[in-house]
Amino acid sequence: MNDLLLRALRCEETLRPPVWFKRQAGRFLPSYQRLRRSHSLHHLFHTPSLASEITCLPCDELGVDAAILFSDILVIAEVLGYHVDFPLSGGVKVTPPAIKQEGDVRDVLSYVFETIRLLKPKLSVPLIGFCGGPYTVATYLKDTTPQMLQKLTDLSIIYLKEQVLAGVDAIEIFDSWAGHLERSDFEQKSLPYLQQMVEALRPLQIPVIVFCRGSCRYIPELVALNPRAISFDWEEPIDILRQKVPPHLAIQGNLDPEIFAGPLEPLMEKVSQILTSMKGKRGYIFNLGHGVLPRTPVENAHAVIEIVKKISVDSPLST
Ligand code: CP3
Image (cartoon, rainbow, N blue to C red):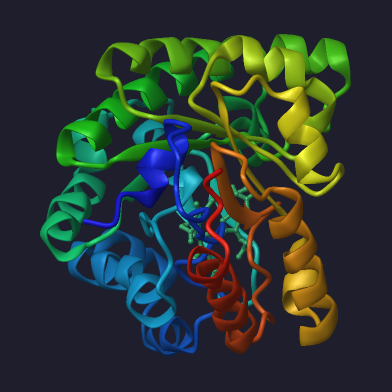
């Protein structure tokens, strides 16, 4: 088992940073796009054999150091009777139930746990499970009332615990749109719910990564949550962020997905700059600052992975 990700999450010494890409399962891989043309996304998400196959694609084809479950943050809404659809034309369509209802996470999302169980024996890298932050999910449901935020929190805690029982090695909470809230809203609509989730998972001793766009603005608040790692976008250089986050917490990020999708030369320059600035620093996971853009050439991913992996051969990061 390649345990680089887990060691970096524990802030142990590693020869190089682990590398994986947000939204690596899907979107930009030609092998995924072929599957996507012959199946609806609903079918891909709900069929464990296909979802597990897609989860493995970036590991087998790119050689990333972590797998992230092929699913979506919005499937949790199915427990509340919402119908979630991703039309081929793009975007997402969320339809509320005619009458309020609530199912059991273990039943409604059993296909996710089955996917995890299928994946575990196939993978040679850690598997990241995930869910959305309640605020971000609620924005897609067009209901950010405290009742909805609390309901999503309670369901997400059950959901994450079941993912851990099924076998995931780490958890990432994607509260993508929370960091761009103004302070009082962030403190009311995001933070307390993230806190409940992180605390509920603590006894399970599973590493938890928290991600929001704009997280640079709320570093003390996110540090106070005491997750295992904080994932950053590209608003500040990663070495500066390393200085702002206490050394016992890991950090993840923060290549701009636009640069990742662009021409090779500036991309390689940027990646080298990031890697040089993080040389010798523990608790660092190379990643993007947000999801891979669908138009990203797959060669760019190969090139980035090659340069990250080259570090351990040329100049070990450990000091
Ligand atoms: O990281 C991975 O590859 C694992 C799977 C994953 C998906 N969505 C698959 C997906 C993860 C971790 C997500 C998270 C997610 N989903 C977030 C948080 C992270 C972020 O990027 O901000 C959010 C906000 C969503 C909601 C969502 N899902 C939207 C708005 C859309 C439609 C637009 C889009 O991004 O494509 C999705 C669809 C979605 N989620 C696809 C996949 C593979 C569909 C892409 C396709 O058409 O095949």
